[in-house]
Length: 100
Image 1 (tube, rainbow, N blue to C red):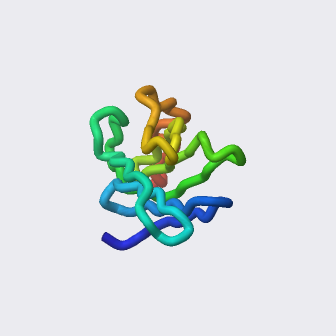
Image 2 (cartoon, helix red, strand yellow; image 1 turned 120 degrees about the vertical axis):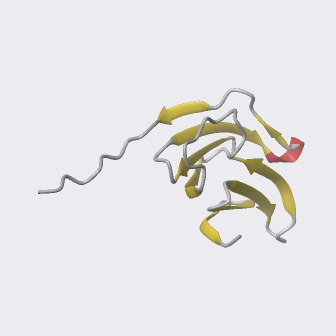
Image 3 (cartoon, rainbow, N blue to C red; image 1 turned 180 degrees about the horizontal axis):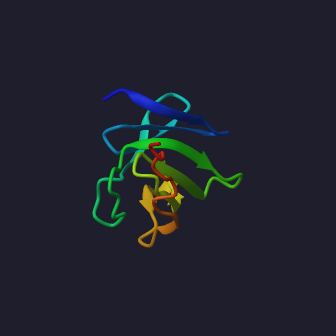
């Protein structure tokens, strides 16, 4: 699938796409760990990844989806671990356009 968003941090590269996959790569483009936003753990209505943002410590990842959800994930790429309890920051934060 095509990449829809990319975020380059100090030691890692994050990519996301319409297939709902987040890939965490090292600087040599080796896959460190995948995250599957289509997993029922996230309850996304449209899990395509639209945006990614990593905190300065490289431990918290914000993932924005095509379903207008924003999730905060605890990650540890060195141990290939994603926290079991994602924090839902926002759901359905968009509104349809009014037709006049």
